[in-house]
Length: 294
Image (tube, rainbow, N blue to C red; front, top):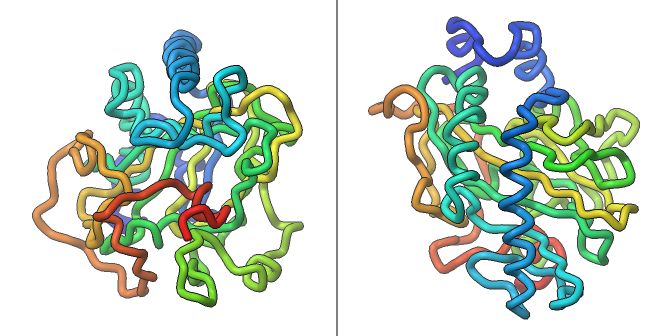
């Protein structure tokens, strides 16, 4: 569903001004959006998973681990598919976040995926400039990710940085010169970004970040010894249909979380880069950008 169609429906969780800001700029931040009780539940479950990670020594279907991960010092880069790992995560994704998603996708909303990313002040916690839609092309670009900071986040914690209005610009090649998928821009392309225009999305625990699937974004390394968890849930308008294998499909992928399923695909004429065939498995953007998948 395109912008003007979405705007023809009333917003429920955000203001009309905020909604127009998102469509004009490709991102939105909402300070202190998540109720404290919900936030406490999310953090309690997250800490349980971090403790569980102490039992394993290498990345698996649940955890993406940094090379520095040990039993005594767990360094989890990502909890994969949290929506199917615990009901608290899915209740959040299919509840409050789905309500918020409907203000941007229109009344018919499809859940695509979730992930819980961390920053740990380790050697691999920088996320380079990239765009999301090249990982999972859809027939149109009403696809977006809603992030929730589970802890207070400022510049010391490696916040999400976005380039405003880049969602209306070009899509970049995220393969290297040898044809390897690296999940990010080349050094030359990244060097062309005007860093003075970058907006860093920060806030207290419970603050929300939203970015469109075409928006250029990255996050700098953490300078804090405290981990920075960012719970990410991705949604699409129901008429945006995926046409490549899902990178990390959970049992909830493509579930309609608001409204009804669309029987028609809406097509945006702008082309999209095709990713590798993910049907054989997927690790994470951390592993791809660090060259661990080559």
